[in-house]
Amino acid sequence: MHSLIQKAARSHRLSLEELTFLLSAAELTEDLAAAADEARKRYVGDGVHLRGLIEFSNICRQNCCYCGLRRDNQHLQRYRLEPTEIVKLAENAKALGFATIVVQGGEDVFFTAEILAEVVTAIKKLDVAVTLSVGERSRQDYQLWREAGADRYLLRIETTDASLYEKLDPGMSHANRRRCLQDLKELGYEVGTGSLVGLPGQGLESLAQDILFFQEIDADMLGIGPFIPNPDTPLGHEPPGDFPLTRRMVSLIRLLIPDANIPATTAMGTILPGGREIALASGANVVMPNVTVGEARLNYALYPGKICANDSPAKCRSCMEGRLRSMGRFVATGQGFRQRNTTERGLS
Ligand code: SAH
Ligand code: SF4
Image (cartoon, rainbow, N blue to C red; front, side, top):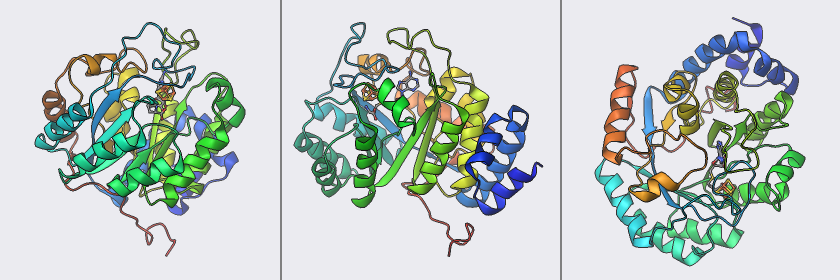
């Protein structure tokens, strides 16, 4: 095995140059995945945490150039679930056995801090972990939701290249996105972040920087997905992100932050059939099946071709259990908080 992969597996540290080299090395994809799979087994085990994802609104005040929910997209039928509908979906997900509910949406201003706090309070009564993913808000909002019982928050940095970010996310500031992540950490959330792989103008060194950033902020969860061009956006004609490169990102993150929770993202499964399973064998240990139903399930169109859009939550759940079994993995019990392993990481 390449000495740099051995070094990563042993010390969980690599320099910017070393990371950039490994990201460039297509021929090392399998070896990296094997090392990451071993680290995954040692640090977080064979159990895979399933998180039930509720996509409650596709209305968004932002205008991210890659995303189908951007406010300027006229080709999308917009929807917003009622708070009671969101809670009902959470109850169904709980009945299906999900121990974490993820509440995600566009930046929809209808959902004031108070309304979302009530949703969190109601879902927490089901004795599940609650993850929010509703974009950039004030520290006060994050605090209110934390007090209401929210456990985790997902906010991808998308890219650590501030000028690329501000070009592709017009009107948004990279400093504010970092501020949000810092506030969330300070408020005691488990914080998930991550990046898009293959954005136009993004280089390998920038992806290497992303990994160092994840390590620096001690992210608890890392969601990595390939950029998938959406024809209803300004980036519709750009080439998609490279699957093997996305896979090397996942593997390197497992090696550098070995006790993190890392989802096999829907985007990985969309860009390549069986892509989530490949991710699960390359360092990932979480899957987030969609538990939304009806029109909403079809219209949360971040990118085209999203897998499982026509399935029911029950079908997705049992399908995933079967897929995991055939890989020698199983659905983990419990709410799946990050289990810090300081001794293995040599930090004790
Ligand atoms: N509005 C919230 C959450 C919803 S968007 C937020 O932006 O944080 C969730 C994620 O979808 C984004 O973080 C982005 O990384 C991803 N996404 C958006 N458009 C995409 C595309 N075209 N291809 C792949 N992933 C995309
Ligand atoms: Fe809105 Fe999130 Fe899409 Fe940006 S990525 S347009 S914030 S839903």
